[in-house]
Image (cartoon, rainbow, N blue to C red; front, top):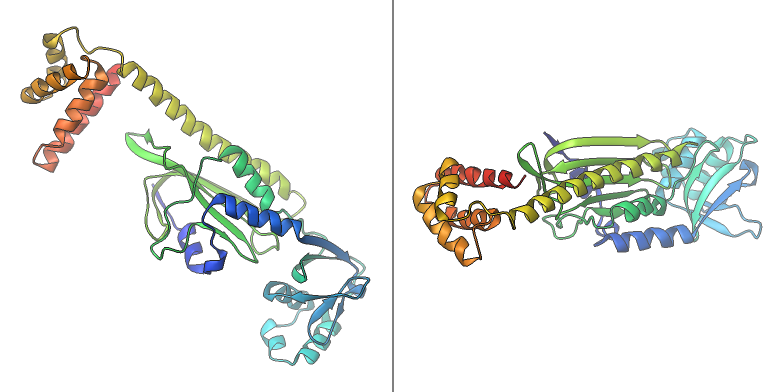
Length: 340
């Protein structure tokens, strides 16, 4: 089994204003951000950098501000060190970038949200909106929720900043048995509308999530990522299939458990106390517990498998020593196999 730390690392990178309390508020934020954004395709010769480090790209002469990420991208395209440019006056810095930015015939792709340029790319980049990724989750895993808040009471596992999105979702009611141990399903998804990170997903079954969002004892871990090139939307199909498989496995296990419970609640372990005693004794249940369990089950309406397992489980909690209690619980648990 694995220990997954991706959500743990995200926790310590995120500011409070990047945290969202629910999937719905995260989705609404991404939807509004997309609605307020424009992809602008401009010839490099038509992109003017003013002396106060704003971009003039529109026909009406309106100016767009650079944020830290888009400024970093411009420096990378120009082949100059961001740290060096930051030490210059705005007028000198704009002159440096004006003279060093490539002026090829290929257009630049600018993402502008309101009056801020969030990213600058060449033609090879293909944008995938955060809303599109969350649509997949909403379609196939709408009952998944974020884990408990981190120990600081702020970080939620749902994050979206100016550079990327990350979401950690689990099904706290989806516990099932895998190789004799209890696990619940969960997954991470991530994306960047501005090219900061790849599109990706990681699904898993886990036993515990701690207060620092470390996922302990994870099994059946599946990972996928894809760069934002021409085939990035095919990545959504991969993520859709991964989440759908996770949910189907959970539902199959849950349905199987429901069938067993239905049988256990109707099928009798014996017609009378003597028959039931023989069955329970063959499973090495202590005699004194059998007597008490019979009385409790009789008051519940009969000697069904469920009534007897329920009675014995309650009685096992009164066993003094933990080792004896665990051993007894294992024996009681095996009685449910009689409903198969």
